[in-house]
Image (cartoon, rainbow over all chains, first blue to last red):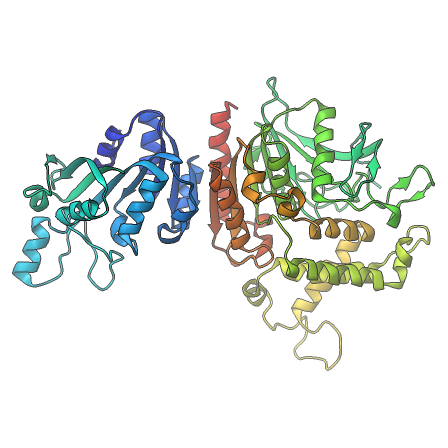
Length: 200
Length: 371
């Protein structure tokens, strides 16, 4: 199956037959992949009508809704995994979203773009300009990304929230996996994004 | 007068009002073939002024059925694949037991002696129809507006019989505004001297004016302000200037008058009173004495709820309420709000985002059901 590398990694982490909630599920790429490879029972939340339409037309169960306001309507412990990829940075309160994810799901898998990636550091340092890269492709004035963090920041936040990190991985620009422990010295420089398996 | 296809229900049915009915007719149409496993039934629920003629040519009006664009061979609800059933609601006027039918005990039309009915009664009557037809499971129950209310009742009453449910542009309770508009319609009918206290059939009269005003009022609630502006604006009807009188100077007036008059030819005034009343009484939480999520607690159906942005009759917030209730009990629920300026009636009109989604969704759940 040809899917985005970070989604592939998440597919590998998820146990077979699990019940998953993909928050900000886009066109349902991850939900479809999980259904196919892990026989999961999946649900999604997605803000964009066209994306929701595509999901429904593909037979996925998706609710049009807003991550910022709709998570509270999900019952506790109703999913094995809650998933969030490339979405945390657009939420109003990332810390609350993480807490909600672990209330709704037994475990959470979060993929975050790493602002500490060396190209971002380089652009800011050398050009004195807000970084614009392939993964973070917006100019500062139009970006929906209102809460950037680095891999280190994310690890710190989890610690502050008493969230256990069961697995931590980073992916570099060649889509190679960088394994790391702690707050990821090398991973925080060469990882374009971080992927974390979290539990309470 | 066309003969409607009917079945006689001999089992008694105790209505919510307490009145018991028995030996009554349900008029229904079927399209396609029932498969050997009896697993391909799509039950379509019609709206207030709809009827069982969902596809093909309507025998009374000579026009295409109300969802002919959706139901048919090779269409979204593909009659080559599914066995589609659509039945006239009780209280209706296309052959099912309703106020215009002759009361066998008196030999006269029921008129206002007809018992008050509810949405729940309509659904229970139709479940008796399915029993008569030997069908226990529904693959998909679908409907818009009052049809959507019936869909919700199907899910609540028969949680294990339904594989999928698609309530469209609907609500789980009628709002004050909804009741208000219906009351205007009913008062218009009853103010027509030809209504004759409901006995117009005996007097061989028709409350044409009253019923068409009711329809005109209701029709405005089915459209959005934006679509009215787009379609009519302040355009004049076949004239260069206003006439300084009360003729239909404006296109919107002429359009509404046409809507009113053509409605009278196919609809019974007393039916209109009874069905609007059933809708006004619709309030699932009051009916069951439970929160909506508790009502849906045992359903195994996958539910796909669809609303339209410009629908101010049953706005999106109503659909969201239903969605959240289902979500709260872990039901397999999807929700989509379609952006359109076509108002409440969007579910009857050609809105590609809506029809394409519906097509894909039904196809995929059919695959899962093994149809």
